Image (cartoon, rainbow, N blue to C red; front, top):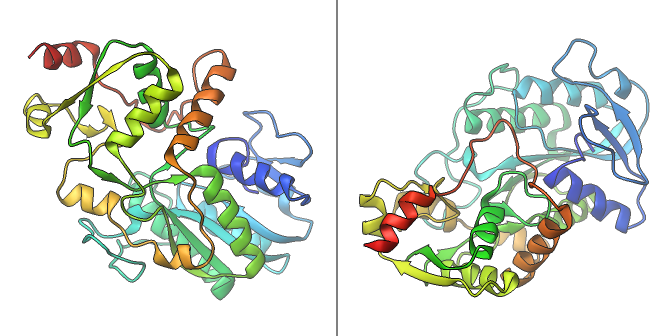
Length: 324
């Protein structure tokens, strides 16, 4: 496991350990290694940073890197001949925007280069990472194009923000409509599919996200209210009023996107290939309740990725919209 201490990597490690697999985790040492793993340390962005991986053989490797594609390429070349299968955790962001509703893995993708040292364009960086893995491992390279990922260990803050806000109680701005369909993947379901796919030797791209309409905005926020037991009142508000107030979808109100191109791209993709190969998606209430249990167990601030912007609505803006 290249990574393995946070969010997706952590979920993959825990799933593998739960299956009784022997797990080696390679990371920078910024966070404690999970228990019961063999830990190797190094910073792949520095000269000689992959030295700890110069010996050893593994059945499979999972790489969650979201930085410069050249780092994926360097690790893949180093592991060539000593790893049976390669999974790169990519993103549905690799598709050219806007993606049509119902688009599958054959949809057009952005340009990318496996040797690119630039990570400022997330979509191009992820596409370059895919190409880097494919160049070395060929049909033994799997590109897990994840959609919106939520669940325990989330370090972006989308679902945690909603849970924390609703736990405060009172009147909560709820972006409508209530029946707006959502598409996401629980990080634990993603991890389980990745390991099953590696064991089966799957290769090529797969959209890793629930079926369209697996849940709705209403069901998600009502699950947050039930899990936190705060007595919060969800005040469903017309999307046009929210947008006219300058509120940014996805960022100020995480997960939510009004109907249109962005919603079609993020919440209406085709996941039939992954579903046909074993992806199972647990109910939203389970994902929400388990994430809330994890947050409470932390006893403090949830983890935050320094390379991602903070999410969440300014309380003053919310209060003004509610008052109106």
